[in-house]
Length: 297
Ligand code: GDP
Ligand code: K
Ligand code: MG
Image 1 (cartoon, rainbow, N blue to C red):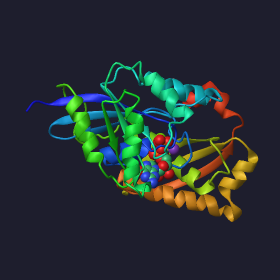
Image 2 (tube, rainbow, N blue to C red):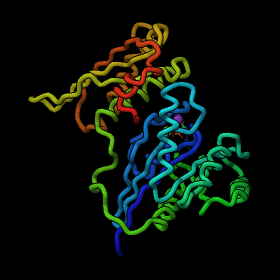
Image 3 (cartoon, rainbow, N blue to C red):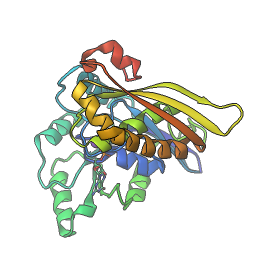
């Protein structure tokens, strides 16, 4: 059998589970996940490889109305990813109506020249399985989707059917990436993203999107099997700094501990992690500062 490959863009409203789905398909945690919208800031590539095909997934920031410069960049990179792909996964969740956000994406997708799969995610939340058929019927009336596939990205249910369906649409093509490679993101970016995920988790909704992570140092020690990482957590306000650090530094300690554990797992080595919190007002409207953090132009 001849080898197939192609690029697949994952689009959908914030929080429907795009990053969770992509991580499940490639079997590793590449995109960070959280219950806050717009957790994914730049387009991330993740690679699925088996002995018949290679699929390169593009996880895009959610499409929404931009509120600031960072938002504008996120939407732009999501729309760019409609082009130059072999098929598109449009992910929705278990809501029983097609809302404004989804309708907007559907209208955009009508312009796409490649097959669009509809992925109904979070079906683990639907107790009555009849309701899944109702959802399929509702979306089928749009007359847009090549196939409608219900999955649970969180539990991994039916994700194999989705991969099978994608493989069927792909043309013959080369293996773009070596087998072991699951993402184009450099380790530094993954480490920064893991720290950002922990800050978001530990601070609940108190510190909204005003944080960015800069890795100041990431270096393996010569003599020992240990990597020193030092990173700065930038936030927009002094009050946010206090929240992140917490009483007696307790919160920052927790963030550091759980981030360190995940970084150790990622790098497969012991890690010495130092975290600093600094205030940089209004960084989201400063283009230079944003590009500094490796976000797409
Ligand atoms: P994204 O913004 O579309 O990338 O969404 P995320 O992947 O960050 O997921 C948003 C939230 O939905 C997180 O809290 C996930 O744990 C949750 N989630 C994702 N997939 C599922 C699923 O299949 N079932 C359930 N119950 N929750 C999910
Ligand atoms: K999210
Ligand atoms: Mg995401």
